[in-house]
Image (cartoon, rainbow, N blue to C red; front, side, top):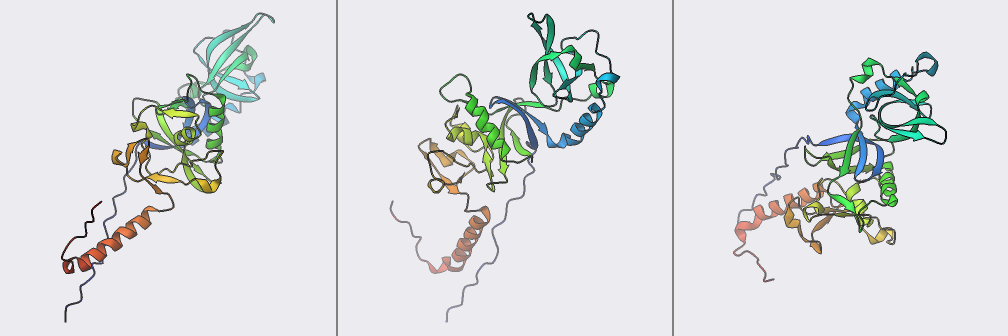
Length: 294
């Protein structure tokens, strides 16, 4: 009697986890357009809270208005009854009312405010002058307006809608190159239970375009785009991953390979394990390798 082949129970080795030093949890604090927005690192939450608590003590009656307002100087500025750290970046004369107003860049949020009156400005405490700006300027990596030189208001609105899916939680920012402010933003959606790439979403909504074939490659392999087009019903589209991290998975824009996101990595590894066990158990009984002509 032939000996019963022993099945190899050894599973395929799992890859070692890689520490991603170019991924950061951030809050998107202000959006002008997809090429000009600001983020605050979640790691700086303690600094942000300390700044806000310190500025709460800025009462108008207790601090005098500066005699001279200087361009490029950092001040405490009150807008909508809240104090923020702001740099004076310009003068806005109001000739009709014969008063001088100022343009301010808020360094912890990123937005600008025109028409700030002198009465809204106070000297900043020394303890807050030495703290670095908490808002970092970013742009979506190699992402540009579709069929235009400028971004449409709809693109900024759509980006805000995507970011809002995080529901006050941080999003994931991937730095592409150390010397550039080009980034990828991945939004974990609490409502939909998925993650989505802001770049991909704007691209598939036909609000943005990518400049090169390389830009079409998934920058974050673990991200999952939601290909949400208004004219399609939910059952008409799928969430997908690129089948491979390398360029072999994309032949050209009309031919590339994907794997549905519902087919998880664990299911794929289980399938590969079973294939290996079957091969180890039976390869010595097979006289030829099945190689059909294609």
